[in-house]
Image 1 (cartoon, rainbow, N blue to C red):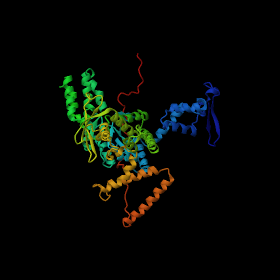
Image 2 (cartoon, one colour):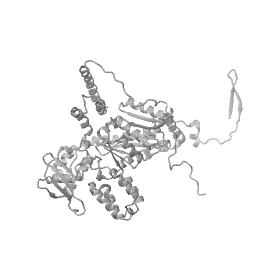
Image 3 (cartoon, rainbow, N blue to C red):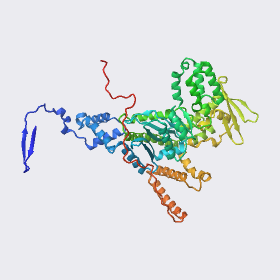
Image 4 (tube, rainbow, N blue to C red):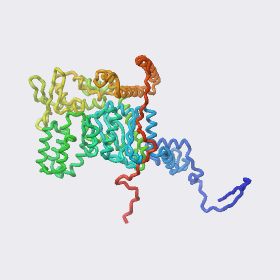
Length: 589
């Protein structure tokens, strides 16, 4: 080693010098490990960042670089240097504090997307408790497909042990879509009530028709308070999972098990449900079973027999939302910050929308070929429905033609009894009422009322009547291949006939016009001709509007979605998730 000092005149002098080495010199093969020989150049740093941002582990990204240059000794830096670089990038994103960094991200997104909305809740010490966010595209999706919500809070994994609570829906291609995401510190009545009220307010006070959740009491109480106009349904999968451990005879008695399944989803009326339930109780001698008594009290929330009048798309569980949670597991870790979770969910959202865009392209660029090419009913459905929904309709049609028979027809041809051809003695027949004058048809299975698609029983009646087409009133707009375009183009015509639409005033008008313009700008983005056309059209519209208003300009202030007092919030306390330990495993000694 050598040590220098400098005097007042700036001359350097050797103060100490040791010529011998206290270690062996590095061999040429180990030269790449020396600090002076390690440097992460910009090109390789960019590759590392891109790969890790795409979800590839740092160790795998480093292995890829090593493979490209013929070994770790030729990369130019060590594996630890790669880890340090990625951690430095993460720390740079949250250097002002995780909570405030997240809020700053929300504000940045709001500048880019004027329909981006968010809200936060914090305690008396200005510490973050809950937050919710939704972008413009999700708000448009909710306007089109927000009739049914799946809400699940089974995923909890980040360094604050927050609950990830996504609002999931189903689009016209039978794909999952995200209506917004919340992170909650606690699963309490207050937290859920706050979240549901914020969700409805941001979505323009539009309530969903049905919401599916698990058997969480706090969630049920919050839904009663915040979503009074929404039908609350419980996930049947969670109930089926509990039955074997709660009802022991369910595992040994096949008849009890069959009757329980019938009560869950195979009863067409409340009367049939009561008969099956009483028979199950009698068969298993379960008159005093406390768990079944409690389950019976909330039967309207889980049995399909009591929900035939509510649109639910035939969904029976929250597994669509749990699929989202499985995706979250790939982007979130016990050490993940809130900012990391938000950025990861944005990537998931982009992938889902890419899949939706691919399906839109297939629907617009290809024609559906019916399995029965000369069937006018299938041709009618193929021209209207999306590819996935058409396949569901086609299955019902084939079932009607090949498996169903009509056992009875009233003298005035208004009532039909439909049953299976081969299983007449094993099944309860379905009753179909048809009004030829109005073109109305209704089946006792209520498939159209719950899912928006005609059932095989109604289609069998149409076949019996030799109808070339079924009434267009039974083509539900939400299942159309062009659901979004038709929805927005038809809004202004419908709004003129609406009683709630008073000369275009109020929040409803501003909200709908904003979303319609957002949808047009999104579709035109990237096409220069389309962009110029929209801009020139808007300028002409503004000039005409100026004349209509008598030359008076109205100044309007933009209302931000953020609440006051959100600056300099404190991060939530770090909490260890239950059942997870970072301690090293002990040996058997």
